[in-house]
Structures are given as structure tokens and as C-alpha cells.
Length: 256
Image (cartoon, rainbow, N blue to C red; front, side):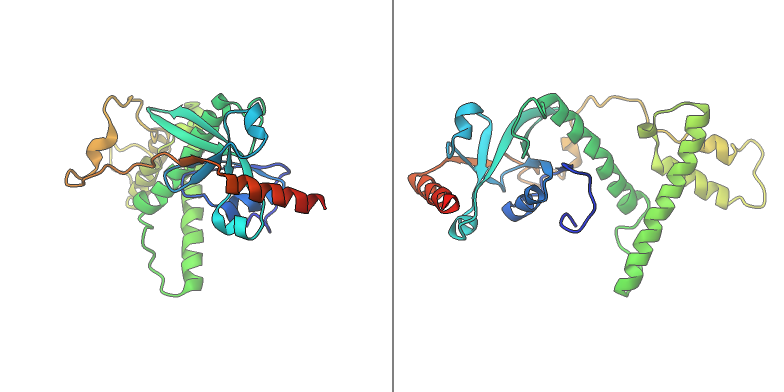
């Protein structure tokens, strides 16, 4: 998708801890784009490999053995530790200049990505599309496309009512309440019971609560689990003499 898709020049791709890998990141950089992803214990990084480290202490390198044996260059990246809510997260980016992408901007962009995760949850849980009904691959795609289309229409109906009357922020929209309002109206096509709110009124009230969380979400996990799920910290080690030797050989080969 990155290779064949149409994206703006120098697009910044923001992803969670699952979007990792040398080949994947190199593909983004080779297409003249940038990335910002959260990394965990499944990522191995190197320090003190090149001259970049002397200018910026946040510089790290990704150079797995497979890429090194194929004489592919290491990826020069920047590792930034920042606070996301109550959690300290390790963010890896191809934007090496701290002025071009500050820590404050990294936190803001990563938090905005959370809206996509909420849509995934709404599609799988609230809209009950975790398991599709179709049995053929072509029909599965059609079913998924129309499910997403239906979600979009419902949210647009609710946004139209809320922005036009209550001036509520779009991120306050509750898909669960909007879906409940649509279903209630469909069940009452022949007439609305006395005292029942209209569809317009129900959609205006379809917003999330304003409460602030005071307790940890750790209680949501089953108590019989030995370890609470965690992204962890990336594994960082200092570059060895072999790494520097291979890098020097690669630089001489490219210069020739």
C-alpha cells in the first residue's frame, strides 16, 4: 500500500507497536516519507554506530543480521521517551531533527491516532462485526465495506445534529448511543410512543460522558493472569566492532 498508494509528499505515518520491522520502515523511507511508531520489547536497537550519535543522544539504529548480511544499510532513527497519559512510551521516528518533530508534537500525534483505535473497537464490538457472516472472500469484502459505510452514515447523521444545535466537538460523539438511537427509531417506524424523544433529539444526546478516570484499568484484566499485558521497552545494545567494520565496508563500497 505504501509503494502503490497515493500519499502527499513527506507524509508522516503514525502507528502503534505492531507496525514494526526493518523492511517495513525502509519501504516508508525509500518512498520519501516519514514514520512515527511506538516500539516495545519486540524491537532491537543499536547505539553508538555512526557519527549521528555525537550530535544527538536520541539517535539509534536498526540493523538486523539479515539486512547486514545482504549488505543493506542500517536505518538511522530517533528514539524518544515521553509520557502518554500515565504510561511512559518509547516512540521511534525517522525524523531526526528534534526541532522538526518535538516531543510535544509526538504526544499530540500519537493521541490523535487513538481515534482510529476507537473506530476499530466500535466496528468489532459495538457494531458486532468481529466475525463476518459471509462465506466467500468476495462477499466478505463487500460485507465489510458496507459495514464501514453504514457506520460512517450513522456518525454523520449524529454529527449533523450535534454540530448544528449543541456545537459539540466531533470527538465527543458516541457511536454506541448513535446506533442505539437509529435502532430504536427503526423499531418504531409506524409511530413514536408518547413521551419518547425523536430521532433528532436522540442523536443530539449521543455524546460520550465527561467523567475523568480516577482508577487504573488494570482491573479489567483477569486476575488469574501471572503478568499484566505490557508493550515493554525496546532492547538497546551498543554497536560492536563487527557492526562498525561492516558499516565502514558498506560506506567504502557505496563510495566506489
